[in-house]
Image (cartoon, rainbow, N blue to C red; front, side):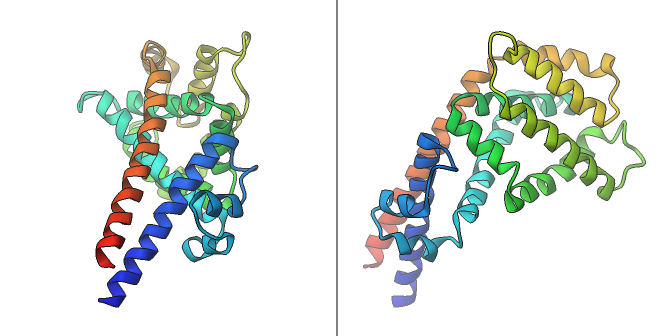
Length: 236
């Protein structure tokens, strides 16, 4: 069936670009990577990139969706189902800071995702319904539009803290304490209620979890690429 063959080849091309783009972004950062480099890494012509994605930002949007699903899923699995939503929020957001700290290309990738129109809109709109689940106790009168506006504020804090590397003075412990206190205050959570969860995050080896998430995301992209290549070959 020719139509199915074309569809399989299109999916395979897209997966090639996702895997090649992810590999290059992790090696040299988003800003230094071109669509032509991604296509060549995928073993295709530079023009073929645009048969899979409208532009480089569209590819980053797909990768952002994949990464956010991975980090949220991992944070949820780390905690019992009956844990406080405040702890889940602290783990999820603290994990992002650790991922961005794994390498400079990852920092560039995450800061860019929080900056570009399509990716930042995805992040903000994905987080807004989660905010109601997490902070409804302290934000009882807030409607969805107000929560979205507050998410813009906390996303700005996230981007700022991600963009500054840790050093001997600005340690990861200090960064997470400052960052989480800012975010919880945005959502009107008293310090006495969020402070224990900040300590719990600091006692967790999130750096290792962050490295595992990055490695697993690359492995999953490689597996998806291999599966679609196999499907395309079967169609031929």
